[in-house]
Length: 282
Image (cartoon, one colour):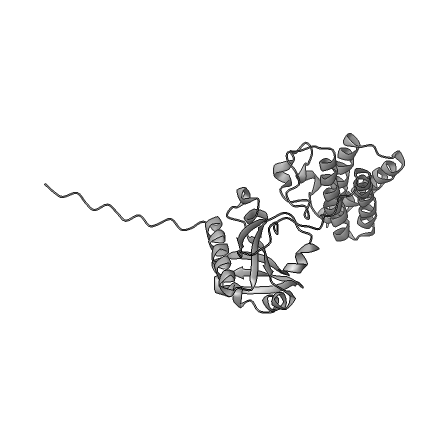
């Protein structure tokens, strides 16, 4: 009888991006430990306390805490410590304290370096200790300086409605790029914060510094109809009308500013239709 054929060799599954990012942080922690002048490596965001969010599109946000200011400055000026953990194919200084870096294998990292004394006044969301030296002080992952408090509901409502007012005037002036940013950017951000103040949606703001992170998971289309709130450069009047409707449904607005905004929406929509008609007839 013929012998059974040898089963084909199944190649090992390639490591996922989350596995590669965490392995990179492991190597980085080992390199910092070898150098002896680093105190801790803090993971932030999806490589910090929100490991449940780590996926194929994540990057590595981290802080390196070192002994003193001289060491901090050396770590900022020379990235040999980073390259020892993983080859760097491109990077640039995006702040006085750190860099953004594209790593070999299409991994991305963003980091800052702090002296231990800096941590007393640094403001940052709570992180996760990925590695620390044996003598590192406890609690480095939690900021000692309080995070900025969000503006009041009244302030955010006022900003949202005046963003619409200013943006619509700029749209009518022909400055449609800045108009789009005011109406479909700034005002929408303020609406997201208003929803947070009202306790609507699911869960807390994902990133205390970036209000629009994760809004698609947090709010349904009844509260945040993004296709209508951000319809594009040619549709500022439509976006403004959508947001005004949402504001009127959920918060108290002064009728004077509402009337002014509504008039501008009509004028902007008329101008947009005129542009469309002119383009189609040419």
